[in-house]
Image (cartoon, rainbow, N blue to C red; front, top):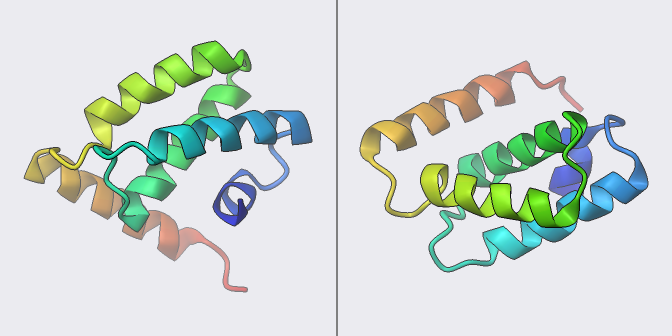
Amino acid sequence: MERLRRLAGRALRPKELEIVERVFDLVTAQPWFDKSEYCLDGFAVRLIHLVRSGITNPGQLETIAVLWAMTDFSRDMTNSQRMKLMATYEAQRHRRPAR
């Protein structure tokens, strides 16, 4: 998936990226997940950080990812949560080098 490859850069090995992609696809397919760009990117970045931190067991990563997504990336999130995510997303977009 292009989003994950772009956000991970060279930080993950192919096997790690494959695990992240599987968990990302599983969680973002849930009906309660907010599929806005800022939520998709924010969730992807967090998954990448978890794997870089050493959580590479697919079952553990999936469990953490589902709980995290339900808390921080749900369609039912509060307006203040949404505003924080949007601000972080915009800040990240402006820091990325132009292509």
